[in-house]
Image (cartoon, rainbow, N blue to C red):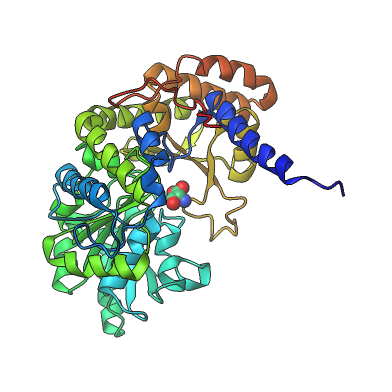
Length: 440
Ligand code: DSN
């Protein structure tokens, strides 16, 4: 094997970073858990905050050197509370998974039972069972039970959930925590329908808003903290278009327990540059979030309808396909989710394969599930609207249904992308969305 010099490796890594940006400039990014941050957020990520420690709570740090970090973190917490009308905010969790772990650690003990959505019913890996290497089971030792799910309505079944909880209670296995929200998330979850029932059984309610946080902030989805959730966890980079990171919001009474779980429980450095970037994101969401959320949902509905008109089986049809940024498509008539994901990628259309209700029973697995999931959060931030959604549906049809060679679609897609190279819904957008910043 030819020996690679350190300098060659160095150059290769930097070149891959640059080529990736070029690829995304010419692609249609439809991963529902991703978005593109503004230039100001990127500036914060490059700042010296990223080289510092600020352990503890602002004003009570265990290191010196935190004067400006504290200033920004106080502002960050105030903005988060304003954006989500919350009494308490902890902006330190470094991801959505860590935010969920903070809640598990603060309010449950290993061995306790949590009821949560299963993965084909939209649950996230961080809500999962130990045998599936889910964070709740594997890391915190929770015993996870799944909600009964209504695949027609694409949401949690309220009556069957009540029955299940009563049965668990009879068996001496009453859940300590109920988790709402998740990763495949087309319609609001029945928080207000179940909150009183859960409370009457002393079940703590957390809502994982990772996917829909920007829609909640924009007033276009359910409002979990007003519907009965005790706390709300999230990542900060999906429909809430910020840096990768986490956030916990809660009623004031839960603040102290959450603070201790986050530090020293789960973080040492909380990636201070990301915290600053979250603060900038909150200002953008407060200023532009309502218009953004409205357009995201409009775009998702148009794309879902166009896919359906093009012959695809789009889930949630009875309810108008979606109320969020996501669309789920059953692709089993053509092949499977894994194959469709790979074919679309060859045409620069980036989606992810998705387990959908019925997959596990039918013996399908995560590599070859029955569906794909599409999200419009990023393309909306790039300024796309209804007519672009219809064009995207026709590109997908050409590849998946008409079996056109994906490589032959690349030039069409590059042309389609030309006019969408800036980030919208932000204060400053001089830098292109995927413009590579070379500092050497
Ligand atoms: N795995 C991500 C998603 O795509 O939903 C969330 O962490």
